[in-house]
Length: 172
Image (cartoon, rainbow, N blue to C red):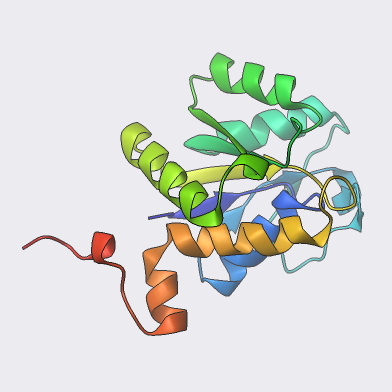
């Protein structure tokens, strides 16, 4: 189960992760640029994201990686811009990293992959980053990230759809 979502609020994967956290009542946090600037404009105040003093891309990225138990990079066909920096920082801080190319997987397969990764690495606080809206598949990214996070949190499916998945039932 996800206990906290970390994100910087950039368009695409990052803003979708924050919105999913709010919709599903999952605590969220993260670091954004000074004056709450993102690649898509100014990040709204209702997101629980702090501003970094230094306008450095790497500092923002590093703080988000440090504050998480692991990082998921969701992409569509091509690696996200800055992937090398994400990978290097995750390795330097001994944080697990999962790169998921959504162009190669169904949503259900993506959810299963992430759940297994979370279980194998004891990750419950996740920094979500990856493809941005306007590149690759536009708003499809946003909608799918929300579906993926709902799928990871089986309780979300129970809450929204009225049933609980078998793998979410405690074996007694």
